Each structure stands twice: as structure tokens, then as C-alpha cells.
Image (cartoon, rainbow, N blue to C red; front, side, top):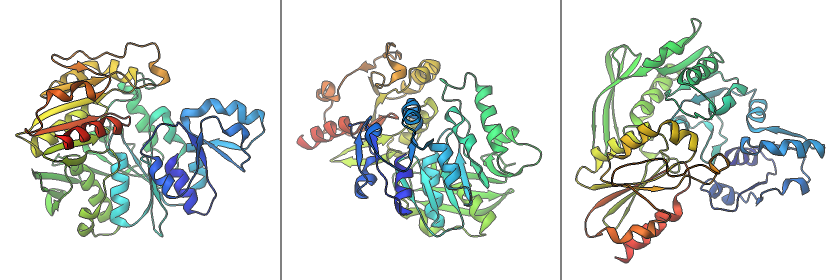
Length: 406
């Protein structure tokens, strides 16, 4: 919603909205653009030409109808608003926000992504982050689709892996031209023009020969088995390998060029493996809230910080996700040297539930990082990983201040 507000403001509309009073990183760009954020439940007393309702606030529908105010939901509005534009949907379980930002940066294209950023540019393409939760992306009619991965999630809505996969299968039918991982080619229909990517030799575009350290990431891209590009970038993390590969594929299929000079000027999306060095300590803020994202996070640490002690600080979000994937969460978090767990995030789904689901040997549940600051000798070198879909800035700042005082 914050991203949409920015886009509408850039298009010349007067925009304002409402949200919780707690700081959320998505409000930063809104404040820069002087877009007002009112307290929750202000809308009944507001006179506006049109109301766009976020999916987390669907209960406002009844009040808006009683007051005879014009409204629609976020995804339906987007489809109507962008219906005449060359929309490229970027979908998948993980990496959507980063990929939208990356490919839009490489091509200087218009985009809307999920971390409170959007940009209107004169461009042949509009890259749209398209989320599968509750099949919201079914409202869109994209020209092309880039599917990044399929990793069972949103278990509160999709009751099985098969149901989750079927959602993507249906969405892919929205476009005849699709890009997707080679291992997900079973989701294709006969009429699709498909470009595949992955580690497999059979993929249209494959990647191999990977090296990564604290300074750079290097790997080779192959087109139908023939090496066509050696990628050298300061972007850090294995997550960039498939993302850069599919960006390369899109560029080559459409433009026959790949702007390698722009890779290293890309600014990471908020809370996507953002690395900060504080004195001699490494602090990482990551949106990782699924076991496979946490596993990838840990693998990155093993490449980048082999000798440092690895500290996991994790806050689960939805009870349904943590409970359904409990064994996977416990297995991957156990890889870290130390594990500290916050109770589940405060949200409606979690009310009345046991918020201490995970049981990991030597892990400790905490309410504030203040409780454990005395455990660390900041003369030694650690890497602290803050992982959650929820904002952890407050706790991260407490740790930063403690490190700086030492």
C-alpha cells in the first residue's frame, strides 16, 4: 500500500492513508514525499474521492458501503490502474521484492515492489511484485510472468503443497510468455513460451562456477549449454545468483544486451540481507521468515564470515507457518552457534496461541535483547542475524548502542 501511495503521488494524485502508530520501514519514503499517515480507523471521518483498501483491512468494507463511499481492494485497483501498461509480474515464494528492484534498476523501468518503493519512469516495462497470498495475484493480467521459485508457504490459506503449486499453475496461465526455474517446468501449459533458468544443464539459462567472499560474487551464465557471460558483482549472497540469471535472460530475450555496469549501483531493498558493520561486529537485517530463507541466510554466512561466531535472533510471525514447518525451523536454526527466539509477533492469528512453539537445544526465548547483552565479549568478532518478516529495528538499535559503548 505504501508503494502504491508513492506511485499515485508521482502520477499527480493527492494521497493520504492510515496505519498503526509503530514505526515501519515502509513509512520512510512516504514521509519524504509528505504523504500523511493518519491513525488507524480515521477513514469513517475522511472525505475522499476514492478509498483503496489493503488486504489486512478487509473488515472496513462494511463501513465504507454503509457510508456509500467509493472503494476497491488493493489488487483490483492495481489491475484497473495498470491495465493499459506493459506489466511484467514477478511472482514466487521468495525474492520478489529484490528482483523487482534489481531488474527495474538494470533497465531503468517503472516498478512497484513490496517494501514501500515505487517509481514511475518512461519505460517499455512496468515490473510489478505479484503476491500469491490468498490468490491476490489472480486479479492481475500481466503481459509476461517471471516466476522465481515455489516453496510451500502461507499455510494458513493453502492447506497443502499441491494446492499451493496449483495456485502458481493457474497464475502462469495469465500470460503466454513466462520465465521460471527449470525444476518447476511441470507447472507449464502446452501453449506457454517458456524460458527456464537454474543449475541444471537442461535449463535455457543455467549458472555454474560460483565463487563468493566478503568482497564479491562471481559466477558464469550459460545459454543452452554454452558459456555466454561471467558475472562479477559486489552484491553479496547466493540469492543473487538465480535473480541475476533470470534478469540476464529477460534482458537478452528482449534487448540482446545486459547492462553489467549497473549491477553494482543497485541499492538493496529494505531488510533483505542488509549488512552493517558496527565497530568490529557484523549485524544483518533480513526478511527471512521461512526455513529455506533462513538456510540460505546461514549458507551466505558460511561463505562470507567463516571464522565468526554466528548468532541467530529470530521472531516468528504467523502461528500457522511456524507450527506447520516446525521441524524445518528447528533444524535450520540449530545450525547457528547461538539462537535467541522472540515470542510470535502480535497479530490476530496468534491471539491465544502458544507463542513458544520451537524447541531447540540451547536456544533461549527472550522479550528484549537487553536480557542477553552481557553474554557477549565485544572484543571478539560475531555476526548477529536479525531474521523476521516483522520490523526488528528497535532490538537491533539496542545491540548497536551496546557495541558502540564497549
